[in-house]
Length: 156
Image (cartoon, rainbow, N blue to C red; front, side, top):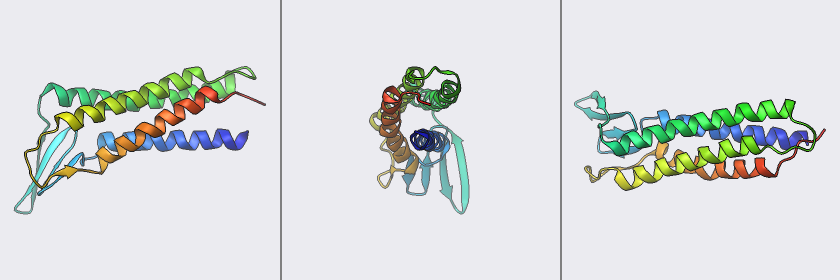
């Protein structure tokens, strides 16, 4: 049982790191000397790296909010797991932790979908970057983690 709990904890920490990196990294869209993330649009010209804040459009602000919420809910889920691990009665299920983790999964999915649909196609050489891919990788992992928490029972 200890190995299962340790495995779930490691999976949860990996998901938290994936979400944090995908939210903070400057590589949602890359190519053509340009990189774009949720917060800045950066351009490399004549050996210089120039950044300006992301646009004030509603869709990018929605993606920013959803990604921050996914990181927060994943973190709160981790705190709830540790709390329930030590305070919950024997035989109890980790429902509170599961709800927070599944909400984190839904937030990252919604944010990535909005970015996919609304991202501008201004640069023909641009492609989705690693931060975008990490967000999509974090989605099924956090959903699976949430489902594991639903099934998991506390034992001695």
